[in-house]
Length: 70
Length: 567
Image (cartoon, rainbow over all chains, first blue to last red; front, side):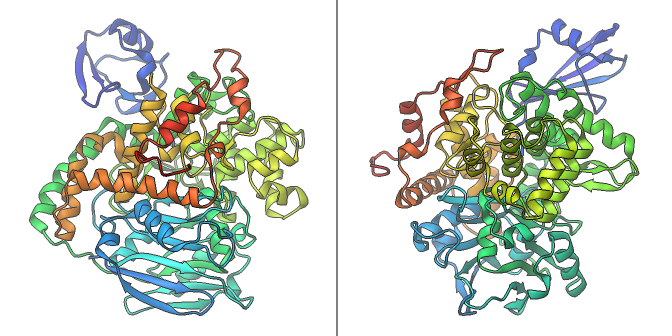
């Protein structure tokens, strides 16, 4: 099972669970029909990852909103 | 409660302690600076002359343990834009000042004699102390000297660049590790401080801030802190820092690359937030992916970048610096960018203006894009005050025009932060309508289908945030909970302010700033996106900055219902 936390276009966090299979973050985005343009960054178990990275079973994937500099 | 305004005259050496009026008390940070500027400073004055004033202003919650509320706001008439300027930064100086009951410092005039000073403030008094022996020091050495004299101090100061009146000079404040890494960088405010022969402001010790309604304060603070801590934007800032933005802007072809050429950076992944996180973790040592620049901050967007031996190169390394001194110069390695950032912090210059000015030199063929050593050599030219260095020290606009560069990324004399306005149009709208030149902090917005509306909303939100005097990185967490900040202000001060007060304060701040610029001689033709960004497409996306001048003028003056400004 993969736990998904989604917070991109609104301020609330949506929690979704996904049955585990061999997938990259990009494939999760496609499967859940997430608007990739609204994603600022992705953490897997708290660690920043790239979209092409694979996700292991029992992971938590947190999709975060776009920030602006500083 | 913060009540005192200290007025320090560098010519007469007179120091006066004034009780702030209720009107001044009920505005903080940028809002108070705008009021004082409009009330006291001749808009037509020479920014580096006797009539200009340097204003240090605290926020309404500064000195408390409210997260992200200890920003120092610094303002004056800008030598770079010729208009009003406020630039705020983190660190500890504001907290120290507020804890001694000080609301603001108004620093006036210029010494008649060729002597340098620093302002010393403790619980008993404020005094001017001789600083001749510190002239020529970088910010780090000056802060070390002050710590030797005053071990518990907080310091805000300039480096050699401010002493030399460089247009690119900023003002540094100590972070909580007592290093002068937190910058009020923009607008050449360091030169204004240097023009007054003022090396620094040293707050010798801390006091405490009285909370009028402790019960209400504690209850509201608990709710506020929970929202700020858990907000997804805070999670992102805390993990990746502002460098999280690199990938987004590059995907949009909005990261500045080789002097805003309008292309994606082929090495963006190497300078991304994700890569910076990995580098810091792998190198370990003194490196930190997350770091608070001021006590009590729970967002902790700052970081510490270590070298291969684990020793600190710079803290923090942020998105704007990665954009302007990295991709904008074709540079793809963090070590070089971090080293340049550290040099800028010590010498006392703004990484945005300096990076954009270096882009002018590279565009003109003086150095090559992507040449690490060439970029470092350009910084040496500035530091060594060579002819080329003098030119770059005047800022991007003057350097670009003098060198014959066509694509000069400035509005109102100030360099654009790391957003190509053709791709990130809402930021372009902000650049072209801000009274402070191209300044992302005036109304930041990256992704939107409505650039004009989004920029306007962001400008209003930032006027609220800045007039309370809290950090802009709260806005993702707190935009829908601004009432909590108002409640905290009421609890601290024993007031009964409401959301209408906040709306009015924000509106007044924006109006005051535009009014100052109008009186300084600005007209609508000053607020223009450079033609090269309206006429030259980003090849891969066919985008130009296509917001009409009429639309920009209308947005800039939305607050001026009586049509009294710029007519």
